[in-house]
Image 1 (spheres, rainbow, N blue to C red):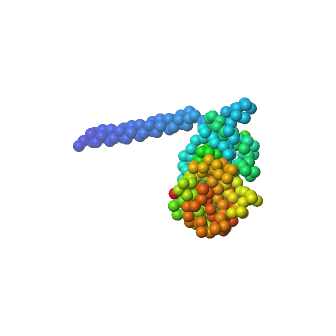
Image 2 (image 1 turned 30 degrees about the vertical axis):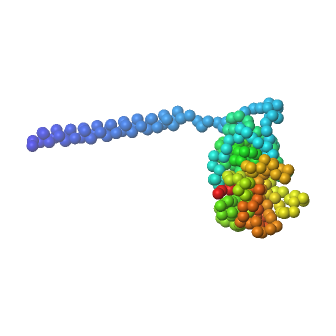
Image 3 (image 1 turned 135 degrees about the vertical axis):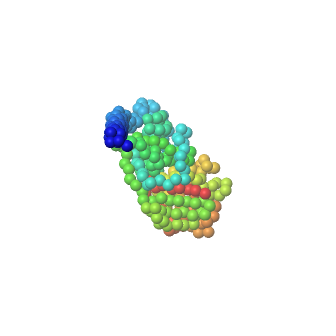
Amino acid sequence: MSVRRRSARSIFTIIAVAAAALLGLILLVFLTNRKVDREVTAAPPAPPAAPVKLTAAQRAALPRSTTWTKIPKAQPDPRPDAAGDGLLVHPTTSKIVYAEPGGAAIGLLPPTQLDDPTWLPVIESRPEWVRVLLPSRPNGSTGWIHTGDGKTKQTRSPYQVHINLTTRRLTLLKDGQENGSWTVGIGTEDTPTPVGRTFLLATLSPSDVDYSPVILPLGMHSEKLQTYDGGPGTIGIHGWPDKSVFGKAISHGCIRVPPAGLTALSKIPIGTMIVITK
C-alpha cells in the first residue's frame, strides 16, 4: 500500500472520529437544554384545596357527628383492617366535615364527645387536610376536616388495640410491641361484635353501673341493635364480674375484658386506633 493511500485513510479516520465526537456533543447539549426547559416550564404544585364557605343556616343544618347520629353522606373506610400510624387530631372548635378536600360539607364535628375532648385517628393526610374516622353511624364512616385554619391540635398515640373475634383475644400494642394480651368475651351470633377500624371515643366511670368500674365506648355501633339500655347501640369495652364469660360469644356486641386488661386499656389516649377482625 502506498504512503499516499495510508495517509488518506488516516485522514478519513480522524475526520470520522471528530465528526462522531461533534455529533455526540451536539446531542448532549440538546438533551441538557430539553431537561432545563422541562424544569423551567414545569407547573408549580397545586395549592391546598380551600374549604367551601357555608352560611350560618347551612352550617346549622348539618348533622352533628357524634355517637348518637348518622352521617348519610360519609365515605366508607377504604382500609378497614389496616393499622394506622398513631396520628390523632382534635378540633378545638366545631369543625365542618367534608366528603373530600374542597368538596361538599356532610357534617359538623363538635370539640367534645361524651364530655371528653374529641380525638380522632387520622387515616389519610393532604396539605392542610386530614381524613379521620368518625364516631357516627354507619360503622367505618370517614370524613375530611380542614386543618389549615389553626383550629386543630395533633398528637400521636403509641398504642394500638387489636381484637381477634375468632380467637377471642384482645392484644394491646405499644410502639408496635405487645404490651398485654387477654382472652375476652364478644358478641353473640345474634348480636355480633362488628369488625373494622374504630377508636377509643371516651372514658366513662358511671356511678349507676355495677358490672364495670370503667366503660370505654368506641366509635362503632351494633349493626343489629339501634338502641340498647337507653343508648344509641354504641359498642364498648368494659369489665365483667364473672370471669366465666371470657372466651365466649356472650355479649350484645361489647368486648368484655378481665380486670388487668381493663386497667391497661383505661390508660391509653382517647382516639387510639382499635382494629377488630375475624
